[in-house]
Amino acid sequence: MLLILISNWSNLKDGFKKPELIISKVTLKNECSITSDAFVVVHQKTKRIFYFSNNLSRIKLHENDMIRLAISPKYPDYVYNGDFFKAKPEITLTANCETDPRMKSIFNSMRDQFN
Image 1 (spheres, one colour):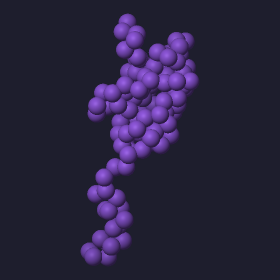
Image 2 (tube, helix red, strand yellow; image 1 turned 90 degrees about the vertical axis):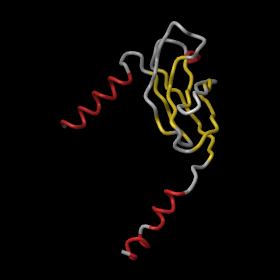
Image 3 (cartoon, rainbow, N blue to C red; image 1 turned 135 degrees about the vertical axis):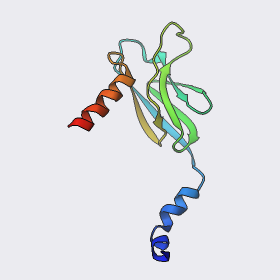
């Protein structure tokens, strides 16, 4: 038992450490016919909104915080709510208006399960 604990100590130790504060470089890949300025990044926990400039947003948050792509509040007549993703030092969020992101995720999961 002690041998197992010692061999897994680094994994156990990482589980207790506080998540690091990072600056995440979020890149927007816009596959929609609307302007990239219509999209924002939303932080799940605080609901804070971060805007893109030239399809890039730099966000200070904790590692593994959840973020998603959404429509800017400047455009209240439109809705786009992407899936949540864990924040990383660099991440690309894709805006695809042809397919509902949630449905796309469901179809991908089904495809992976039955293939």
